[in-house]
Amino acid sequence: MPLWLKRDYKAAAYVLTSCVLGLIFMRLIVYFAALPSETYGQTLGGNALFSLCSQLIFFLAIPFCIYKFYGKRTVKQTLEHSSIGRFKAYYLLALPLGIAVFFLTVGVSAAWTGLLRLTGYTVPQSSDNMPEKFVFGFLVADILLTAVLPAVCEEFSMRGGVLTTARRSFRSAFCIVLCAVIFGLFHQNIRQVFYTAMFGALAAYITLRTKSLYPAMIMHFANNFCSVYIDYAVNYDWAFGGLYTFLGAMPVWALTFVFLAVGLFAAAMVVLMMYFCDRRSPKGRFAIIDYDKADITNRTADGEAGESDVNNSESKREFYGNFEKLYKPTLRDVAVFIALGVVTLLTTVFTYVWGFFY
Image 1 (cartoon, rainbow, N blue to C red):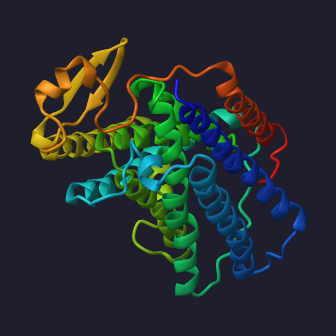
Image 2: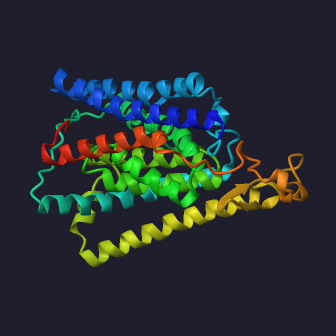
Image 3: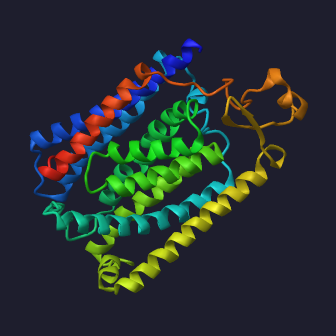
């Protein structure tokens, strides 16, 4: 196998190391610095320190430098399976999808938190005290820190370079499951592990199907934006401010019906997005090559390759990529990934046992 494939695995491992250890490092800094939080402005300042450093440095800048200088890969090569090229109108379907996903995560989070309480877990209470009078600047800052930065930085690291590396070794279905596990444990928070895993799986699926990072970014932004908006709506009596109270007062059967309806709506948005994706792909189709028992999806575009070239034994490679067959990683290749999995699993358990960092 080419040495660049092994180097690419190491680069992806170092990127995840930056994300995982960077998150732990920033949480320790904020936790032990004991920043003042008497006012919401001070609380927001602490959140800004945490988010700006973790997102811009550990999730974006360091990963970019690792791929660029160690992996010796351009942005296009790094995002081989999740291009950030031309924006297509149907990507905007990820906006209502993200809103639907927010409602679904509220249900999953509530159910999971209820199960945790049954085991004796005490949910930490938020100490954020919003000012009595609405401050527009605070809302903008919260949207930037909670919705914009994660949508860009986390997607670049998780559904960008790491997903591309995984796709070189595993079929799409396994990559989706892998991204779910990684994203769930990546948050290192017992209360977030399940709904973030579900979100990670959906984002990975959409990214692989559309070969674009934009839909996952939009969905991520919409989901997090809803969270920010609802917090402000509750405090300032805006529209939908009574959402949580309303849902909490509903009987179980009605609540189940509502979440099933939202789930069907989310599924419809995904199906519609995939319809436009397939319809607008080059020549409106995909050419599928099966060799070495690997399912490789190839796009053939005018000027790139014809059917005869694709079927030629010498051309049995992924024309949208740079490799001829799925790379089988060695234990040495995945050792760092396994170690990071153990670390994130332990820190997630710590948040359950001691509520550390929260």
